[in-house]
Every structure is written in structure tokens, then in C-alpha cells.
Length: 301
Image 1 (cartoon, rainbow, N blue to C red):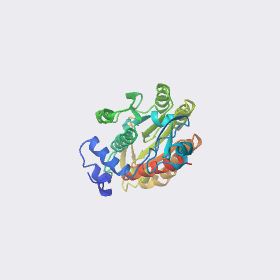
Image 2: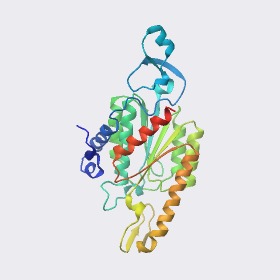
Image 3: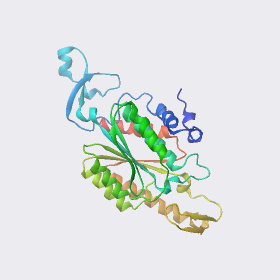
Image 4: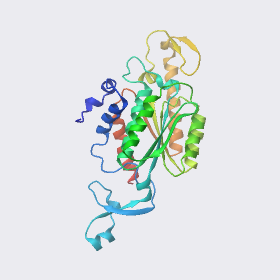
């Protein structure tokens, strides 16, 4: 399948049947030209040498070995060969939201994000697992490597659908405890949660010596609130409906949203957690490629 930026447009992705095909389409655009994993270098404990490949970080060339063998070798580190990555996906009811203009729901976009990230990790010979949660974990597959792992994770994602409320603090705490070795925990969701609970959960991940990455998925309409006529808003995670005129609330809504987004970013920045925000109308391969390029750059400094 030839890579085409148009193919990765969410509008086109929505017409593709099956998460496996969608994720493969995203990955093809994301990993093109990627010579080294953005997740390697997590630890500095030396493990072994390997031959130099174009694109490797020249800082890790072992000049002593070159002097003895006249060949270039790269120092590899323990975590480079044994990285564990856990991808946690919010499947609470609010993730099922999809505005009329959106090609994908937040859940569908999150599914594809998780599957694409898992593919990238496995392609670098590392281990990846999956957690799907709302009030508690519905799925918790521990990190594994190997060719069959990706398809298994995709199948687990496809079986789930959004329902229930989110207990973000509890599920993050549990994930950090279940991972028995240092790793990377990626959380994908809309984060319409108690931010105090989110902060506590992220702090525990940090205390447990894991690294956290937040992928924040929103619908464009949740940001713009550009409805033009009176509507009946129905709660997805609470049994309540309210009739509103969006034109009267828009300014206050946007002000509250901006404060909420600033608070999430503040929490992540304070805990040194990578924060990536995307809407369901953004090209997912572009979002992932930008983040992975940023991560490789930061890790090489």
C-alpha cells in the first residue's frame, strides 16, 4: 500500500472497515524514514554493541572498538533491548461522542492511536501491552513482544465500546503497580475527569519510576462549541439533560475550556509528562509523526 497523505485524512479513515487496516494505514505514514525508536535510550545501563546503521545517533559510537576493529559499532543500553510500554485507553461513555461534522468518534480515533503506537513499539523489537478502562480495567494485557502481539491487541480493542464513567486516579495507580519493571505508560483519552485524580495518578506513575505520556483526544465541537440554535444537551456519563442556547453560553464555555486545558498542561509539565493534544479531524499520522520526531530530538539532547 503506497503512502498517501490524503489516505490518512480521518474522513477517509472512517470509510475503512476494520481497525487493523486503519492502523496500518496510519503507521505506514508515521514510520516512513524512521531509523531508530523514539522510545530507546530510556535507561543508561550499557548492555551490548551492535553495528552502526545510517540514522543512528553518532554520540553512541564506540571509538575504542573502532580503533581495534576499524568498524563502527553503536553502544546499546539495557532499556533499548527490553523496553516495556503499556498503552491505556479510556473507554468511558464520553469517548463515544461524535459531532455531525466529525469523521470519527473520540473512541475510534483513540483506538487507532493506540493500535498505531503499539505497532511502532513492536516494530522496534520492544514489548507493548494494552489496558482498556472506565471505572476499572476491562482489559489488561501485559507487555509482550512478537509478531502475534499486535493483532491480539487490535482484536481486544475492537471488542470494546464506550460505556460508564472514568476512575482515572485508580486505574493509573493500578497500572503503575502492575508493571513490575520500569516502563513507559501511554494514556489515551478525552480526560474529562477530576483533574486532582488525574494529577494523583500521574504522580504515582512517576513515583513508581515509570514514564507517562498523555494523548488528549477531543472533538472539534467540544472546543469551538459553535452550535447555532437552542439544543438539548444530554449527559453521556450522567443521567441528566439540559436545554441551552449555545449562543448565550459560548463565551463562558470557551473560557472554562481554556482554563481546563491550561490546567492539564500545567499538571503534565510539572510532572515532566509529554502532552499531545489532537482533535478527531486531524490527520493521525501527522500528529504521531510530529510527536515521535519531537521525542527523538529530546532524547538525543
